[in-house]
Every structure is written in structure tokens, then in C-alpha cells.
Length: 83
Image (tube, rainbow, N blue to C red; front, side, top):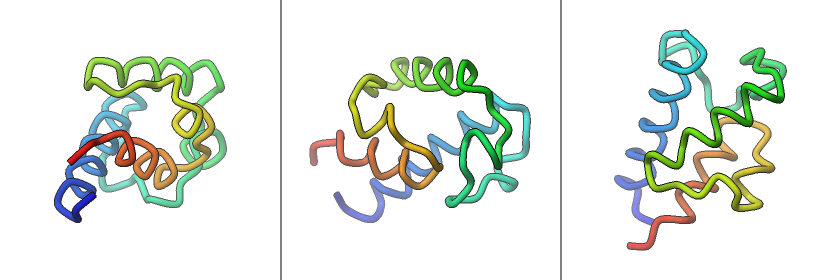
């Protein structure tokens, strides 16, 4: 994956996450964990992953479903994109 695609995925994930949890996108850091740092419940995180389907992202992929922090999710989604 090239750097531009990675940046696009990162921006998409962070914007959608910020909108979902009601924070400013600049408040989301790559190392933030969903449950502890972003204060998402397991149900909220599950709903967030399910909402990624609208972006043609498979939320059931093991590396996506098991992501613990923002950067892990970005990397997992990036790996689904075929150049």
C-alpha cells in the first residue's frame, strides 16, 4: 500500500470515529485504545465496526475485529485495499 492510500484510510477512520463518538478528529491519536482512551463500550465498538461496511470494509475480518487501538484498525483496513 502506498503512503497516500494509508493516509486516506487513516483520515477516513478518524473522521468516522470522531463523528461516531462525538469528539473532534484532532482529539483522536493513533495510539488511542477504543475501550480505555476513547471510552467506547464493547457494544459501541462493535456498532462502529459494523458501520464500516458502508465504506466497503469487511468488519468481520479477524485483524479488524481484534483491533485494540486506532492505528491497528487503520493498518488492518489498509491491508484490505488492493492497489
